[in-house]
Image (cartoon, rainbow, N blue to C red; front, side, top):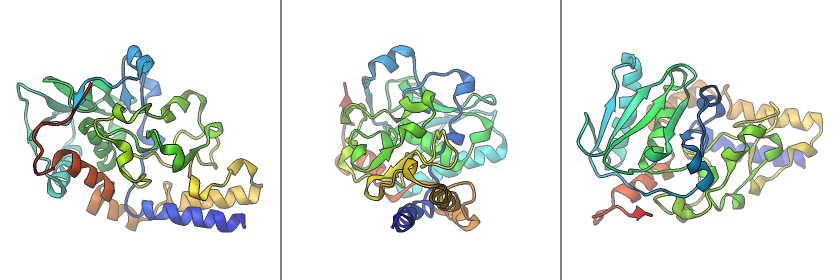
Amino acid sequence: MKSLQLFALSFILIKCCLSVDWITENSIKLNASGICTIEADISCPDEEIMGRKASKARAWDLPIHIVIVKDFEPEEGKILREVLNYLSKVTCLTFVEGKTNGAYLEVERGAPQSGCHTPAKSVGMHGNFKHTINLEPSCISHHTFGHELLHVLGFLHEQNRPDRDDYVYIFFDNVLPYKRDQYDKAYTVRESIYDMTAYEYDECSIMHYSITAFRLYKFLPTIIPTSYFVNPFMMGPHEARYLASKYYSFLGESVTKRAKFAIQRFSYGFSNLDIQKIRDLYCKPNKTNPIVIN
């Protein structure tokens, strides 16, 4: 019976792999840099961690001015621009390269081990100043840049939704102790510039962690959908190996080349619901003033 449950769990998660490459702990390298965080890739001063209150932020005015610093290698710059071009094609977002006197985004090529992160003051548009994304060389990819770009546009991690317990179970016993706060829920829907709970829970979102992110034990998950709940700590060794083989075959580094090609060629990791959220927040026909969160 448990094997059938595990197979069903694997099946429901496979569908995400074929359309999106979830963010993993390998894409979020912050410890070496000593940067404090609210979410794993949102850096912040200590007072923001203690308060956990949404600062004044809103959606960006279009077009969004963006500077990709010259430190990027030509191929790296090409990757970043492909993501911008893709979002311009499937949403109303428009990007103009260059600074402006108002708010603009600067994408920086960080030093090795500096991490891939967005400062808290750059999650959503906070004011007429430079907002930044830092990308260390090892995480310059379509998926990681797309993930960080959505932070800048105002989106938080999907598994941090205030209602996430209705959809996924976090195995805190299998999360690295110093990373457990990265699974803290947003206290209210108003920590985001949009109502996170107005949409169905999206396991396939580019903003969702992988099922093994920040894992303590190599062959066990950290996130499992509640509808297919199986406690891995209650399994025997054979069942645990079965679970691990399913996870790593479909959701780990050994995902098929065909699936990886499909991700890069068609969506760069964005789910259909990611695109819909962007359209709802930025592309409504009668949208005049973006909502301001105080």
